[in-house]
Image 1: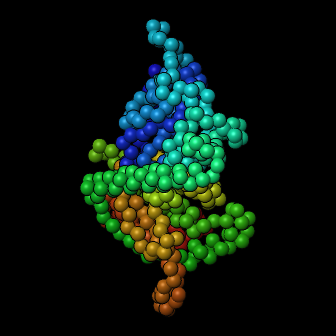
Image 2: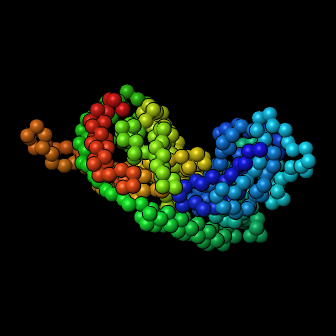
Image 3: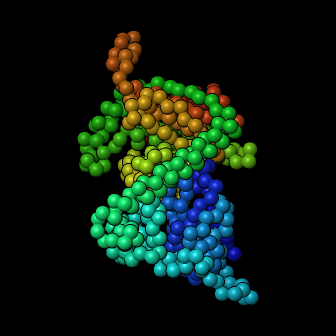
Length: 387
C-alpha cells in the first residue's frame, strides 16, 4: 500500500487546506498526475502524485486543514490486490460531492471564491466543459446578497477587501517566519561582483532580430542559464541541507522569486535549467510567472527548488542581498543593468554593468568557493553564445 502524503510546498508551509480532489477510489494514476488542489498560505497549488497506482482510499475530506506529512490517500501499487478483510473504500463525508464530480474551476475563479467565502461545491459552471468561472462566483455573491441587481455587489466589496487583506497578512506572517528561521539557523555570508554586460546585451539584440516577437529573449533568461551552468562546477551552491547533512542536487532546479499582485512572493522552480535551451527556458519562465499570478502552480514547482534567484532589476535596484530559503544553501541576486564608467584596455569607456550577489550557507561552503562561483558566473556572461 502506498501512502500519499501532503508534501511540504516550501519552508514556510506547516499545513494546507484541501480544496479539491481530482481523483476517486478505483481510479488509476501515474507519476506526475495532478490529484488534488491544496491551499497554502501563499497560493492554491495543484498537488501531483509521486507513484503509479490505483487510488484505494481518500482519507482527507475537502475543506480539511491538515499538517504537512499527513497521509491524504492510500494507493494500491501496480498489481497489488486490495486487502480482503477491509471494508469498501469510501470518500470522506466532507466534500464528497465535489470529489466525485471532479468539478472544474478556473484558477482566477478559485482565487476569487476564497476571497469572497463562496463554496465552489454548490456552483454550476457556465464555462468551457462546465468549468466554474469568475462570473459564476460573482453571480453567487449577488444571489447570497439577496438581489440580482448591481447595488448589492458594492455592499459585498468590503468583505472581499477584508478577505484579501487577511490573506495578505497571513502570507506576510508565513514569509516572516521562514525568513526569521533562515537568519536564525543559517550562518549567511555575502559576496558581490560587478559584471560587464556589453557582450551579453549585444548578443541578445542580434539573437532577437532573428526571432518572432513572441519568442524574443529577455536578459533574465541569460542570467538563469548562467546560474544553471555555474552550479555544475560549484555543486555546494546547489542542493539541500537536511538534518545537518548536505545533499547536492543532480540538476539545477532554480527557484524564481516572483512577486504577487496581492502582495508577498513565491519562488517556484524552473526545472533542470542548465540543460534547457534558451528558447524553452524563456517560454518556461513566461508560463511560470503567468500561472503563479493566476494561482495554478504545481506542487513539484514549489517543493523542488535547489537554489533561488531573485532579480529586482526591473524595480530599479542595483544590488540585492537576499535571505536563503531553507533547506536550500544559496541564493543569487541580480540588480538592474546600469551604465557606468569602466576602464577597458587602459581606456575609460561607458559600460553596461550588472551587480551579482551571492548569499550562501557557511556550513556548506566558504567565501573562497563563493568567490570562484561568482567568477564563473561572470565568465559565462562574457560568452553568451555558449549559454
